Figure 1: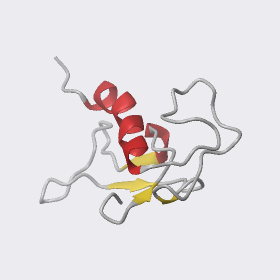
Figure 2: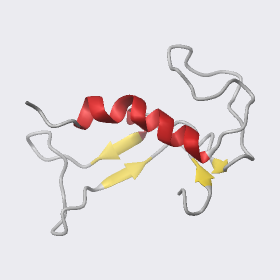
Figure 3: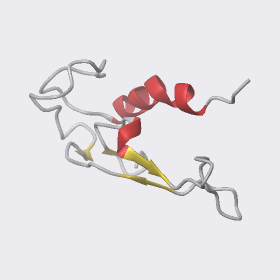
Figure 4: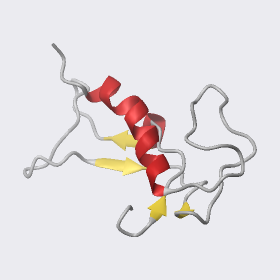
Length: 91
């Protein structure tokens, strides 16, 4: 998406679907890539052309304010808020 300058705008874990096995672990192909799908592109579009909507979850620290442009860096910021919590190696 970044190479094409496209943003999702709402890249939270609940908008990422992973195929999991019976143990709840992500499935991977022979090349060890995880099978996943990204859903809910309501706010998606070209970076800098789409804007955050008026109504959104107030409990989330969004990278920009209501009506501001959504840019590629915002998608990365949202992912960083949850990725390590979900996928950090268990000790």
